[in-house]
Length: 433
Ligand SMILES: [Zn+2]
Image (cartoon, rainbow, N blue to C red; front, side):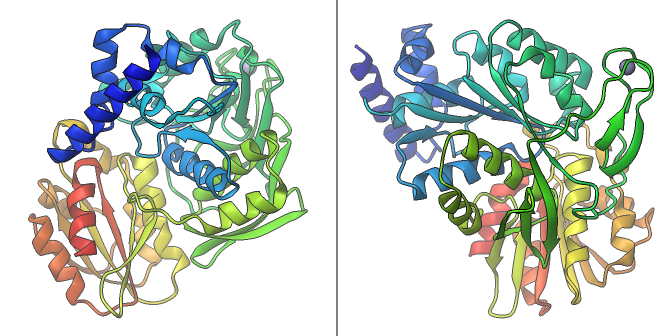
């Protein structure tokens, strides 16, 4: 029966692709209609199911892991198309696995953890960070984390946690044999993203004391009242630099260079490195994999748009993500251009007020020629820029095609392109055209 379902899933995916859809969710939806417990059955043959989550970077982390395992010749399933909700995850298991597949690396949307864990329990769970994101959908961050805690309680899942994020480590008590990863205070000076999440102790509500902050709520924290504090990481980034791509050392012994820019990616590389070590992959293979990964999904993707210009394309959908994208410009020492695209379609959340929580002053010290504002809310973006210390020629072109065409006329070596969610695909297509 299971093989019938798998064939049906493949057929559904192919048909769906034929009519121009991505085909990532529909197979799952169809199978779930036929058998409510399909995910339980599909997951039975697996020895190891790893979940990867976090507000920012889960796709990159999961892709880094997938790319490395593939290069190491390991048989596994991975929802690399970003199908990270229940139906997408069912599709991944149904379409990709054969009888010998024992390992699954599953990127999971924070808001879908409860629904998916009704059917399957991961053996290990990588949790990278929690930031305010799409509030309309998730509700308050505290509620979200409490819900995840309820799902994990009593299930003996090994948690692989970012020791630097107090939102993440408050989940530690629900895990077994936890492993921590973090960045040492002298390893790298992060851009000031100007984001402040609330920094209160999850146990007693006392304000946390920080002896060092990487950015936002990430750093060396401690509660003076109850003793809640940053755990000592098992895997520590001891050195990192960006030019604009990341090189780093882990535990003072493993050094390697990557093809990823954006300093927040240091955490994603570290999370991937930590999990791959736990899975027993040889160090040389890990370094080879992590060092050769390039993004194709609009997350810090580099695209040559003309013979002179490389665009660094990076999706941003919340203040932390946008601040991080704006900081990329700091690692480039020549004159640059920006293209910012803001839509307000359903999947973006209709409320775009978060751009006012973004710190556009990050651009003040950068050497910028032009900033093109595009998308349905281009004018609002331009207005926001007026209220910050930005010295550049501001251009408003709502139509994405026209905006990219204008960008291609500029001759600077690097352009930084930042679309929000529903603007990504069209922008990427126009850049690659
Ligand atoms: Zn406390």
